[in-house]
Length: 190
Image 1 (cartoon, one colour):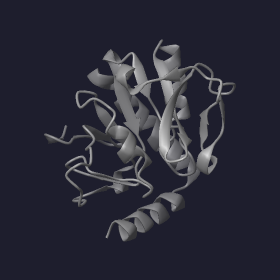
Image 2 (cartoon, one colour; image 1 turned 90 degrees about the horizontal axis):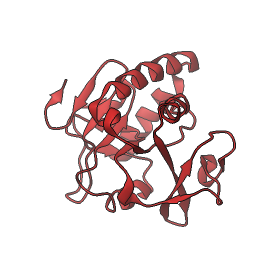
Image 3 (cartoon, rainbow, N blue to C red; image 1 turned 135 degrees about the vertical axis):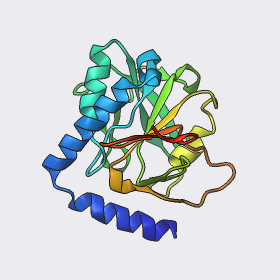
């Protein structure tokens, strides 16, 4: 079931025109930046978007301008490590799967110092369950993040589905932000 959902959503997402994805991503950024969790966070773990994902570069640039500490994941073997980014041009390089990651020399960080996690996903449901790319990197990594740290998924509206089956140990996102709404996984739509 997850594989067919993953394929269906990716196909739809890849067909979305680039200019429309940029407009939607800008709206998502405005919603994210309006959240109390974002305003109060000092250290934020982002992801560097690739392909048809919600665009995060503009979000990270503005977060840096606002004095936030920006972290990015770096994948090595089967694990995610963290690196601090101060310049989105100089501090990143292509890493695993062609995704931009912190350079090896970047300042290392630990999950303990994170105030907010921004997650990619292929699909999310109204209860905060997430379908990723199927390799389990984030699933394994999120077990190291204290439960009190908010997890926020970024998605286009069509990536939010009614229900996703999950396992008991899967971490759910606190909120899902789309171009038209913020879904609180505990309260549903805000």
